[in-house]
Image 1 (cartoon, rainbow, N blue to C red):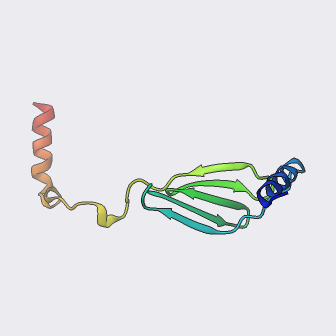
Image 2 (cartoon, rainbow, N blue to C red):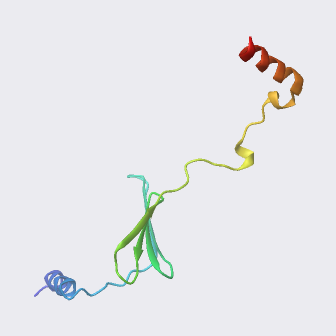
Image 3 (cartoon, rainbow, N blue to C red):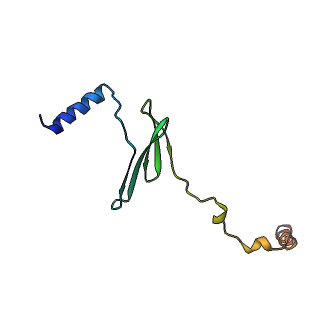
Length: 103
């Protein structure tokens, strides 16, 4: 029996008895397909990230516990543009609003 066939039947047997395969931490990047895959082991979960989308798998049960996406917006103060209206005098701003809505 050749090696490929032996590994195939060994894999089928291990799946039948529900043996959990060991997973090592690794990274893979394919610039041609623009894909990044990363596997991280935490205390309770194994995290598989595909293009920064994290899939959390419980290490004891093997079930998917959740999915986490990366933050979309940068909420740091340096990302907020400073406008000139901040330096305007409050009386003028209030009187303009007052005229617009009261008149």
